[in-house]
Image 1 (tube, helix red, strand yellow):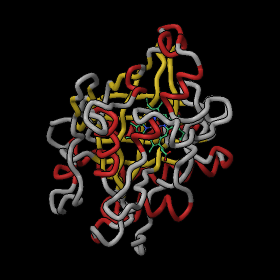
Image 2: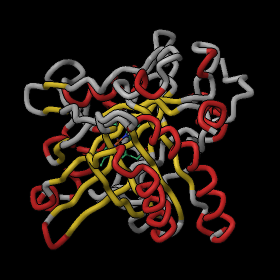
Image 3: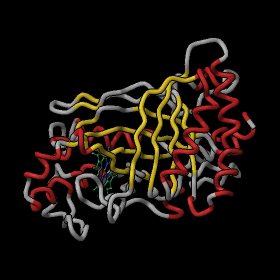
Length: 315
Ligand code: HEM
């Protein structure tokens, strides 16, 4: 059933953006760290309002996610969201998806880097010594929505009502309707090996054509292609979708080329099933060939409460 809730969601349903900052932090153990965090999160809407008034073309937005360990520290009187648990690492025969720490996640998007940066800076000031940095990635829209490996990324994302249906919690967890779950992973690519692969082979790895982004027919698409392993169905044969907002990032002088994977879903299990297919394989051993060129170096999961929940609890 679609989310009927009156709860106002955070701006989960939108495109990847031109520029994004993906920030993961942990909350310090000292006495009043959680009070400071609650106050900072409560002050975030005002900072956003001010920046969006001054830079209306920037379409600046920020999504806040809260990790499983942080939830009882921040909201001791409230039950945890039904599906919230830490990222489950995966140990495939050839490739691993590690779990890395993360209490707070901020997904900042805009049409301009300076707007993202300004928000991140103001947010950081307000968090003071209540947090420690874990990871920060600056993503950019690359050409015509290409991923770092040169293929168009985001094509098969659900749109409109389907995106809402895929990402926002409804009646299954009434206290948290309008919320969402998100998994993030930072991947680094072996670009020398990837670029040495002829385009026709790269297309077999992804399952789509490179230049014009057309899906391969089922009888030619390899079963270990990225697309084949990420199309999953529920017990009724309905396709289970997630909403991705991946962006490339990198540092050419250090030879660092990466993809920041970020997937939103109303159920963490959907993303976890995709990760199992990729890392363990479907069937087991038939793992995602994209992983031969991509190494997951981080992995964490967060709950994204409804905007109205945050306002009520912290505003
Ligand atoms: C599709 C790239 C990681 C789930 C795609 C496409 C590309 C791509 C180029 C095809 C265009 C599109 O429909 O968006 C990458 C890269 C990754 C990565 C470079 C990191 C190295 C992941 C992960 C998941 C995932 C970790 C899931 C946990 C999907 C899904 C689709 C997709 C569900 C659409 C399948 C379909 O309906 O056709 N990805 N991806 N991807 N990817 Fe990924």
